[in-house]
Length: 98
Image (tube, rainbow, N blue to C red):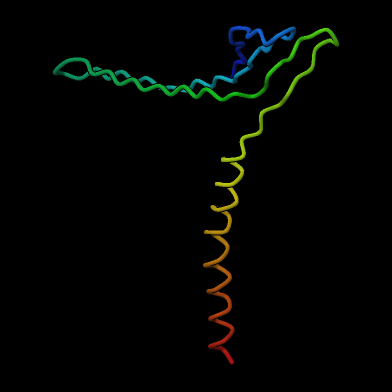
């Protein structure tokens, strides 16, 4: 379940900054009835990610998005970690074939 929440407004001079964050909840529960009793298991995960800042001032309201550069960088590194060994394997096989 995804929900967007707002933080407490922050006054900066004549402007007001309002942080926005996305909260993602995930969980699972399981109950087992056995001859010896009852067993229950529960786990839950919550992820809080800042997504934007809303700036309110004399000139109106504007939304400033927050990009997750770390996630983009890690995704690129993961892609390189998958592709480079595959390309090297193909190059070695082509070299040995000749």
